[in-house]
Image (cartoon, rainbow, N blue to C red; front, side, top):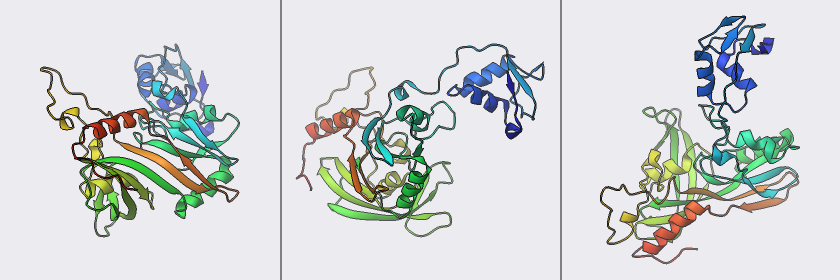
Length: 322
């Protein structure tokens, strides 16, 4: 039984149930309501109505609700470095930093209490769901303000690794393009060479770590932190990240790497990588005590295996760049 407190007036029924069942799938909660298992003020409620102060909600039965923490979230992210003001974890791919819109994945945010039960951990920056690597978590409000200021002043140095389709002409260059919302695809971003309304400047430094026949392994150092910045910048110059379907990246297929590859009849070829090849390899920042901290996250197994395939079958591997 739940009683609606004044501060919850106006909340929807499903949202109220979600507060009492942290981690439950929204689909399960909606089904619970539709099946007549929930009553409000003594009457069965079959719709997701808004609640009023003093409403009494009774759940007649509690079926086995699926937990929103997916199997991949059951293992906590590895802690790479801990200081008095923060911890840096290796965010695994497929895990969002904050709960997704469906409520089915609590993400890193839902694991903060398990990572450090006695610390008030705060997320101070984000990585895309499929991006792995270094993620800074501040300890408490004062530390969070410190890191917010560090990011706003562009004092946090981040280095990413990306495998792209194609090879750049230069070994080192910068990308300076304005980024703004893609009006044809909500939630996505487009680039512009000139200022436009709603667009913001974005800068990325790029250097080539390795060259292959059809691909290149790039180091990316963004000096601004725009959403999807690296992905859109690379797409805009014709070097989309491998596996990034939202921004022109093609799947990494053995048939495109190995000469003489023969496809088995009736069997669809499985990509060598199930996500985009983007990894937050290194982060450098000034801690609260003024000490400079450098943290590196090793390349995850899926990216390491994919890279070995590219290296193995590259027919014209060029000299490695420093």
